[in-house]
Length: 116
Image (tube, rainbow, N blue to C red):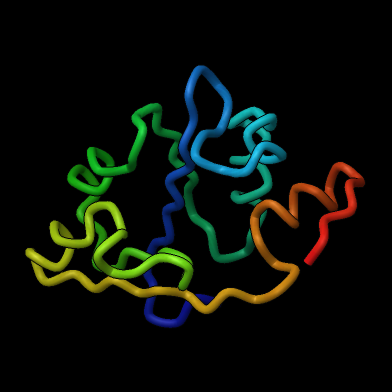
């Protein structure tokens, strides 16, 4: 459960119906399939596909109180971080857990072994 979160929306990138800016494995999955997997997570209220290269326009429209990215990012490299912080929002860099990446989840779903 996401403590203190009243509504959890997850933007997922796509270009012509295929996810973008992800490893080759994930890029071959249709945005709809990825949205179904993400929406099945208990704490997720909505998955919102976007077709731009980055989620900046969606961040401007939604104005999230909290913007979460993986800890492989820095606050300086999170798209929209300056915007969110500018209106008092918070940027959270989530700890990465081995074996729990998006790519790893999709690989297991389609039966492909992924090296750690």
